[in-house]
Length: 102
Image 1 (cartoon, rainbow, N blue to C red):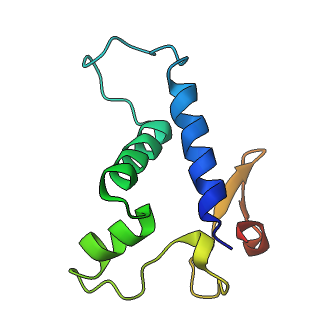
Image 2: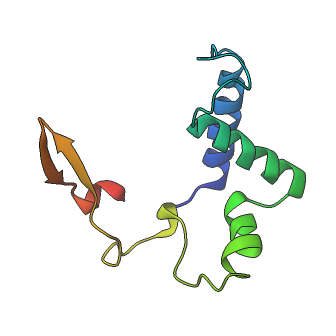
Image 3: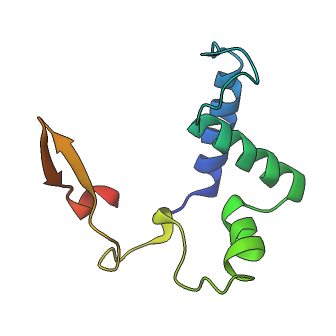
């Protein structure tokens, strides 16, 4: 179940932690994907709008595009419509237990 207070605390901790991260390459020299930066971008959007990230995504993306079956993992109770997740373990492809997503 989604917990807004816990989510806020986690976002604040991640944002504070970013101040201590060493860059892997000089700024603006190479694209590097970073989950941390997406967390930061979402947190900034929440703070600027006063709305939770999930509400922003629904209002500005899902609803205008008619994406009625889209959502967030933390809000899902039935994973039967999700595609199966897979992982490589010791070089062999293995199915991930859906219960681990709950």
